[in-house]
Length: 418
Image 1 (cartoon, rainbow, N blue to C red):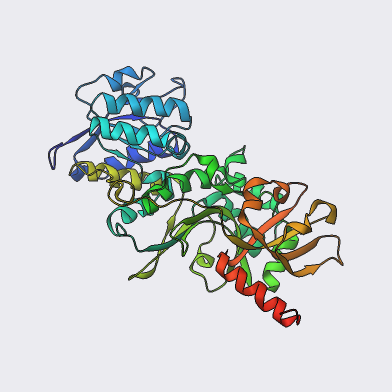
Image 2 (image 1 turned 120 degrees about the horizontal axis):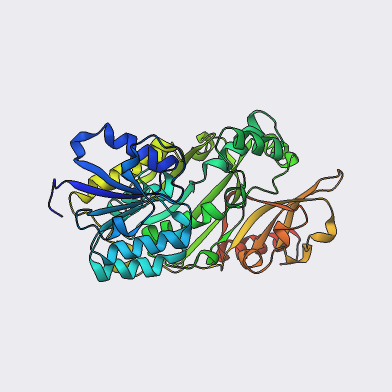
C-alpha cells in the first residue's frame, strides 16, 4: 500500500465501536479513508447511517477488489476469525478489536501474517485508547523490559472503584455498572477475568515474545471480592484492583498472571478509577512509564482503530520483535507469591500448602490470613476461587526462590534452630 494512498474500508459490525468509527471518519477527512460497505447481522435494526451502506453478505466485502482494508469489530470469536483469515488470504490488510478471537487464534494469525505479508493490527483490542502495543513494539524492542503491569478491564475497575469510594457491595456496584453501560447484562467475561486474561495473552507476545494458549496464564476476576476485603484494604491503606502483570525473574523466565491485588495508594495504578485503564512499564534505562486512558466506549476504542488505519497508509506491520528477532522468553510458574485469603470456613483452606502464614484473623464471621504460596498451587488447584474464598495478591507479590530460602533461614535463626 503506497504512502498516503486512500483507504477503502469494509466494516464488519456496527455496534458501539463500529458506529463510533463511522462518526470519527466523518470528522477526519484528512485521513482519506472511507467506509464502502458495512456487513451486519440484523438488517431490520434502525441505524444512524444510509441503508445503502449495509449488507448481510460478507462476501460483498471480502471479494470486492476496491476494498483494501477490512475492519472487524464483532463480538463472536469464530466468525471474526473466519473474516480476518479470509481477508488476509485475499490480500487485504485487517484491523480488529476482537481480543477473544486474537487470544484463541494467535498462532494461526501469526502464520497468516507471515504467509500473506499483509498487516494485521489490533491496538483497540488491548486497552482501547492507550497505545500499549505500538509502544511495546517500537520503544521496548530490546531485552531490558523488566515488568509490565496494567488495569486492562474498565468494567471491573468501575465496580471496584464504587466498592471503595461509595461503599457499595459487589452486587450493587455491578448493577450500577450495568445500568451505566460499563458492564454487559451477562458480565461473566469481565468480572471473572476472562476479558483481561485474553488481552494479557497477546500483550505477552509483544512484551516478551511469549505465545501460549489463553488457559496457560493463571487468572481470576473480582467475583469473590467481599465488602470485608475492601474494609481490610482501607485499614492497610490499600486499594484493590484487578491487575494483569508480567515480570522477568532473575533466571530470565517470566512470571505472568491476572489476579486481584492490593495496590498501595501511591502506586500509579491506584490513580486509575472507574472505567479507565492504566499501564505501568518498567525497563532497564527508562525506569517506570505510566500510560493512562479510557479503556472502553465508542470513541476511545474507535480512536485506536483510527490510529491503526492511519498506520496502514505507511505499510506499518507488527514486527513481533521479541518473538522473531530475540530469543523469546519462557513463561514459568516456579516462583512464590504473598497472598491475602479471606473465607467463611477454615475447612476450605489447605493451610499445609502455605510456605508460612504471616498473619491470621479468625475472630469474626469472615476470616482471613496472609501467607506465602508457591505459584504452582494456584496453577494446579482451584480451592482459592471456590466456596466464596477470596484471594488477593499483596503489593510486590512475587517472591523468587532465592528470597524464600533467605526468609526461611532467617525464621529458623530467630527460632534458635540454626
